[in-house]
Image (cartoon, rainbow, N blue to C red; front, side, top):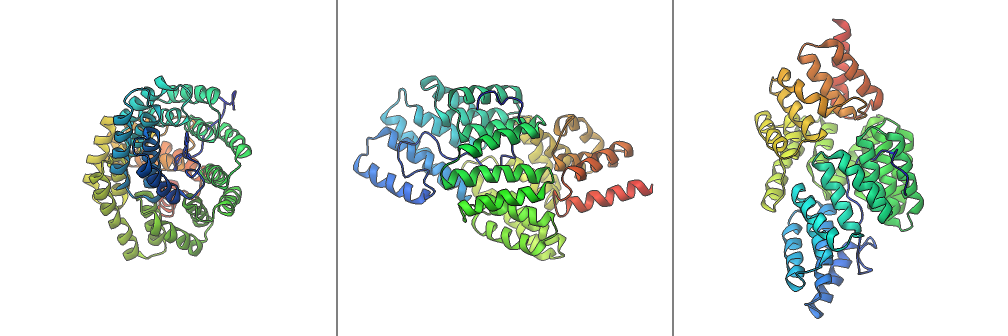
Length: 418
């Protein structure tokens, strides 16, 4: 969709659908069947380098959609096998390695591998998508926008559109993100694409407090693919924001049962907490440690996930250690927010102030970042700034978190009373 540079993106909680796939069975929505077919194909033709590259990419996608990091070593082996069979001009394996590195949160590696793949094939959709992801996650937002525009010129399609939109969203251009995603929606033909893009639109509307259109998009996504967990999660978060706690809990329990990742565990735990089910909430928070150990054992960098989860629901000192480690590796709005918040919950709000210009810059449309900013400003002795930040957070998305929204309102009331 050339010419969409004014737009902004959705909240990229999910990666784009598989791209550059030479086998029809990958991308039909039945990933497990596709993997089984690839395995059978490679038993018959074990020297098919591109087949091994495709299998490696499919393993990465399985890990992403199931939350099972044990697939990553399998992906690593399949991609290494592909490169051993075809060491030169193997853009499919290099692009697969880029996707694997990004999934493991090795964004420097993802950037390196994606650029190597693009030197072989400048039109590799998977490589261009991973390059955009890496630049975003490394905080190189201007370069990410340029990469998205270049990808849009070379290979416009849903994987590029959704990333293009996200880059724009991070720049504060919500209207632009919406326009890009609507272009993506118009190009969606398969149920999987329809579910993916509808969910991205729903996430964008939810993030801006537009709950009625968000529910509409999540319903569209679930009509296209009833088992699409990001859509079920989005619908549940929207139900929670509208006060339907029972429906929200039921939906998130189904999500966590199949995808027990830190963000989802925290979301369900906070719903339990808001409902007074403190023991159930603690059980969810404790599961984050189990996931972290498993993920680290399979090569995933978990510092950002750990910092965000533990700051509110665990060992605060450990949260700060993790946040500092992540900030050293990459300086983004997300890592700045995590570090500022970890400093705050450890009683170091004055020190946290230096990160606010990065975590919640002018024009920020992220309610969570602004909530964190406001609470830090209040604790650091700047009530006027705190009042403005908290008011804006609740205006953008009054139901951004079952516990956070409640804390923001209580803080505002206290500020008004004083």
